[in-house]
Amino acid sequence: MRYADRVTLHKTVGSGYNPETGKNKVQVDIGVILPCNTSPLSMERVKTIFGSINKEVTSVRIQRPFKGNPDKAMIGGHRYNVLRHVRHRSESVFYLEEVSVWS
Image (cartoon, rainbow, N blue to C red; front, side, top):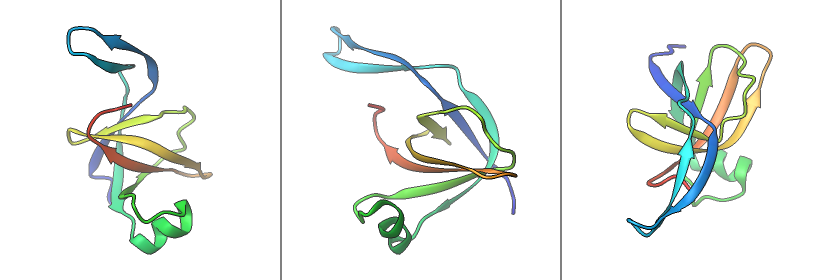
């Protein structure tokens, strides 16, 4: 398995209302950049794991176990929310859902 992609994992620090734009803004930490393998999940697999077929979920595998609890991720300029983090003995798997704006 090739770990050719890079994922930046973020933790939400806080959120607040921005009166200039009139929107809520999520503030995240600097993040950790790690090599990863990304692959989309099929609709059957998404329905089995999450119970809904309305989500487009991407699976991200990291070589080593990741001990933190990130709730946001970024891959190639695209923003994702972390749906689930599965810790295995030798690797970590993140299930990510792409969003346009972090909430």
